[in-house]
Length: 375
Image 1 (tube, rainbow, N blue to C red):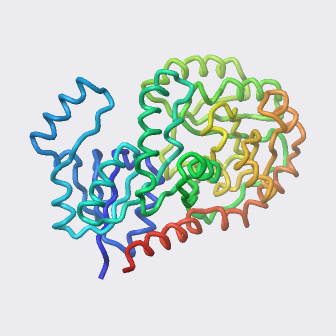
Image 2 (cartoon, rainbow, N blue to C red; image 1 turned 120 degrees about the horizontal axis):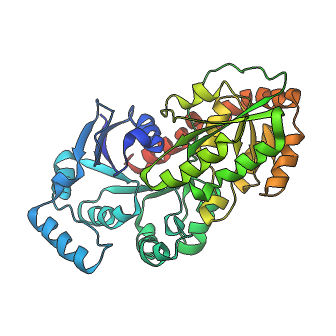
Image 3 (cartoon, one colour; image 1 turned 180 degrees about the vertical axis):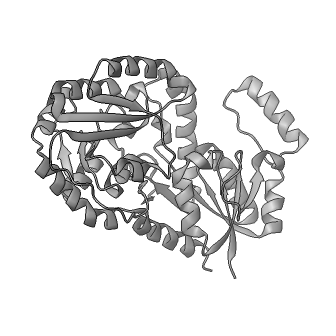
């Protein structure tokens, strides 16, 4: 008989591939309840709006606390009774501000708790001093007080795992944001121009203008399509990026694709391009979705020397890594490419895609979850 577990997150599941993969990995072995703010596309699962678990005094208490402390945590008094009635044995959370709630439930009703972290939250926006002394300080305190209460801690890269071990003496397993294996054909690259693609949220911290500068220097032997996600807080930056693109003959800005469309769409290109500057802890330890999407799309890859990305690209010989995170260094790396060389990198992704995929990493994830509720 399947045991009951719950996944708690306020993320919109239409934009949360990590949770999507988590659900798929667990659905054959568990009855899953989803608790959050956004209804889910998983119609076969039970969804509960998080705020239905509040009582009047929870709302009143939160209102008062917010006046005194903008970072006050909410209470959900009815959740304990719900988990008891539903015989929920394990709770997975995805946001650090739910750590106190999860630990309280563990102590009161004995459920197992798992924190599946999407990044190193205490330094999420370390480039903003106001954030560091407010939200950053709060997340640091949450990590310090609650990580050692977890039954399982999951991180997205080994660099973050090491950091948490050093700072809080709590170890974790590493489950990168790898995509599921795709059976897909390689598009042949046998002549210039080499067609490059970059996709993702267009943020100033990602320095998209440097990618544009690089492609302008490279000239007609390379093209770049930027598939950009626009949000309310990056519209002005996107306007500036589009102005720069309009002046270039070999660069285009394309509308965003849905999560399920990305890999089939970018399969039509030759090379996945990601120029990242290690200007923050999370950037220096990044192992982003797009790297694995490039692999599943059977693209050659060009990246800056971000350590864990560099390890994968060089281990499987699937692309080039610039010596430095500078425009000139990346230009030199890309200039060294030939169509035949790009094609060989693409061929090398055939075997890589079978290894660096969610199918393999989710086996580790499922094994650890099963071990928590096997008694």
